[in-house]
Amino acid sequence: MLEVVLRSQSVAKGPFPGTRGTWASSVSSKAVGEYSTDNKDQGAILDVHLSVDEVTARDDEQYGVPRGISCGRPTTVEFEPRIYLEAQYPSDQAPKANTGKCAMPITMAWTRYLIVLFLPSILFLVWRRSRRQVPVSVNYHFSRRCNKTCGFCFHTAKTSHIETLGRAKDGLRLLQRAGMRKINFAGGEPFLYPKFLGELVDFCKDNLRLESVSIVTNGSLVKEDFLRRHGRNVDILAVSCDSFDEATNIKIGRGSGDQVRQLYQIAAWCKHYGIKFKINTVVCRLNYMENMNHHINALQPFRWKCFQVLIIPGENDSAETIRDGRRFIITDDEYETFCRMHRQQKSFVAEPNRLMARSYLILDEYMRFLDKDGRRTSDSILDVGVQKALNSVQWDEQAFVERGGIYDWSRGKTMCSSERSGLDW
Image (cartoon, rainbow, N blue to C red; front, side):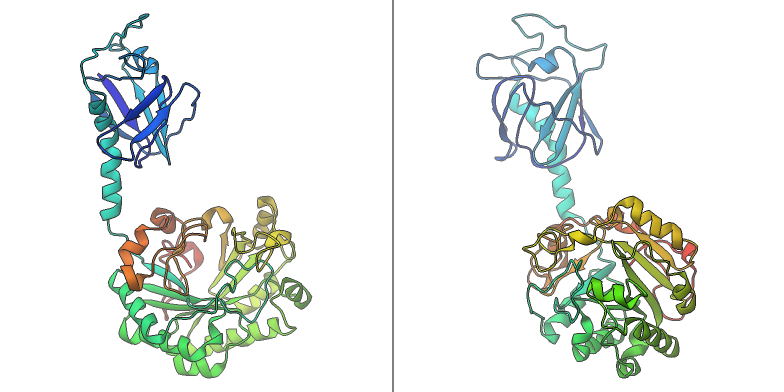
């Protein structure tokens, strides 16, 4: 009996190490490829076990089983784009090696072997396409336009597009029906469009009845009048602040000389209108040694999110992109230096780059989901619906939950950082 261990799944297409020739399967037109003795790739991810009583193989020169199998040795096969198969006979059933002739029967069909081999992969793909993902918390970047020039920005003003208010509401309604409980409005700078933003904030609370509505802003355009009109429907207001040194803010591209003063003003407004005040800090080359404890103690944010500066291909990774963030990069050890300096803060939440990959669900200005590297997009949820759009991008729902996040995200609740769990923005 042959035991086949499937380590990861996808539609298969070559190569098969251990012999020479070509193979094809009636299971899928894509299951066609070449194999050679040179391929040594191995891997292991997901375990799916099945057993086969009979196996045969055929190559261009003679009938027989591939040498790696007929000799009873483990054979690892890599199938593009990421399939790893390991075939091994139990020691008491391994066929005896011989010369010239194969010890296995030669009357069974090679296609039968491939069907058994690829069936788990095909079933996995069908399951993945059919299962329902729930977009519990969505980051909606409804515009890329911004009034600041942060050198490390990874969501730059490639377009000036913004959906109409009606289409934006339609998209948000689709997300709510698909299970969204929290919406985070970001940009660009969302307060460049205060009327549009206010309409969406009120719609999400008054009509969709979402648990949480939050806004991320650089703070420069926040007005008390907006909070007076719409503050009752804003659960969290997150303000970006990378330094409490105005000269550093100016070097980064975020400051205009009054960043810190405005931050304190917004904190006071949030307290007055019952909005949870949050600070977002990007830790980079210019600020990783800065001790911010004094100001954090004074401001008392309910949450202080500290991100390691992130480079996204096509957004901020070269001299040809709108922003070139390479000069701001820090090592993991340098990021940890900043974290050690501030970890005693109850509101402190560290977010190194390794936690960000694939765990954020981002909707762009066309209401398309962005893939984990920001390069690929889904079709608009307005055109294909939420589930089809979600299935076309790589969003790691498990990493999303493990990163931490279903926390105290609604107004009127308090909870220290050590008590939080679940989903995080």
